[in-house]
Image 1: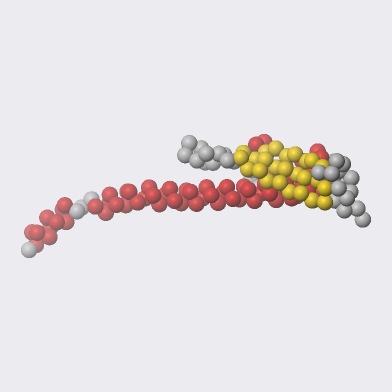
Image 2: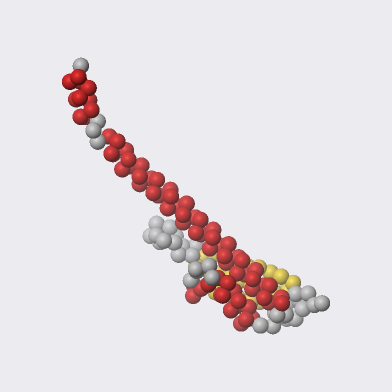
Length: 136
């Protein structure tokens, strides 16, 4: 009786190790994917907030300072640990001029580079915000 149990344990000795080795790969892939997706969503949120901040700046400064608006957007994105050299900012008036009560649009384009670019393709993010300048 004892001899049969010992032989069975000997045949199944590496089963738990093999199952763990196979599952640890899947678990790490899922954890990494969740981390990558979270960082992607955080990046998109930062770029959208930077575009909104640019619109606020343009509204307060009557939109006549596109260079200042771009600098404000880049300064906002820099505080969130993103590479602002990969970001382009375009400030355009939607109603011909920047003077109030006309509208202004700030478009932020950012090329997201994942941690493992061989396995995940790099999407280009476009975030834009639009606001109306009101003269009071």
